[in-house]
Image 1 (tube, rainbow, N blue to C red):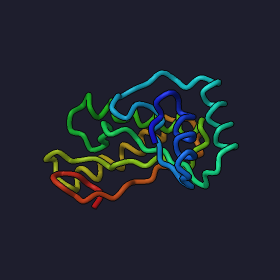
Image 2 (cartoon, helix red, strand yellow):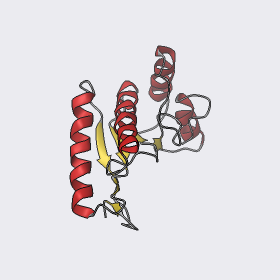
Image 3 (tube, rainbow, N blue to C red):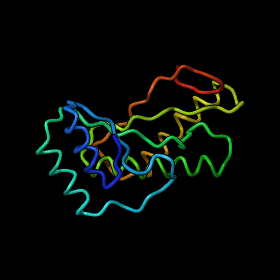
Length: 148
């Protein structure tokens, strides 16, 4: 669901079409970073959630994140972005953040998988204790994409 107009709008949109579950982004899905959520934004989201009829709300990580990236800056941005999205999802009391594992970009499947594991470990060392969990999304395995 789109969060245009605020994160609470994903709930409004889902309820307006009788959804019982939605998946939403916790920020613009095509930007690396976002300003922190305000207390008012968090409160509005939680109030809409409590008033709505949704049984489940999951977050989806932005599409730029690649935990297997071979480019140092891209990998650094991926770690930071995932960390921020976990914090945002946790603030919104979401149970899971769905994540595409990444692509090895020619480094090889084994190297890519090792880098993804090390990256997730690094994220959880960096992020304060959160209740949200990462749900790795399976992929078709096209090109150098991992997770099939």
